Amino acid sequence: MQKKSISSSVMLCTYHTIYIGLGN
Image (tube, rainbow, N blue to C red; front, side, top):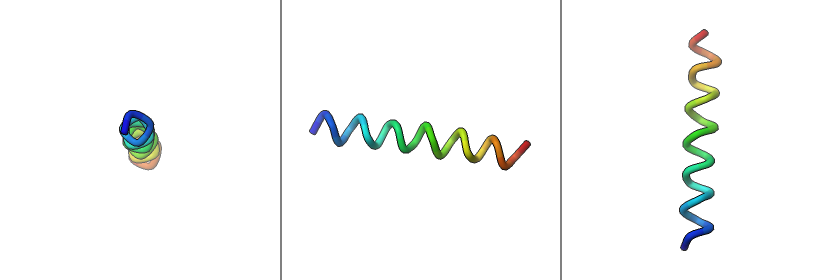
């Protein structure tokens, strides 16, 4: 469960970074 939670957090962080990149 911990690994899955970490993966989800990483994906969310990556998505957020990409979203900001596209915004700029």
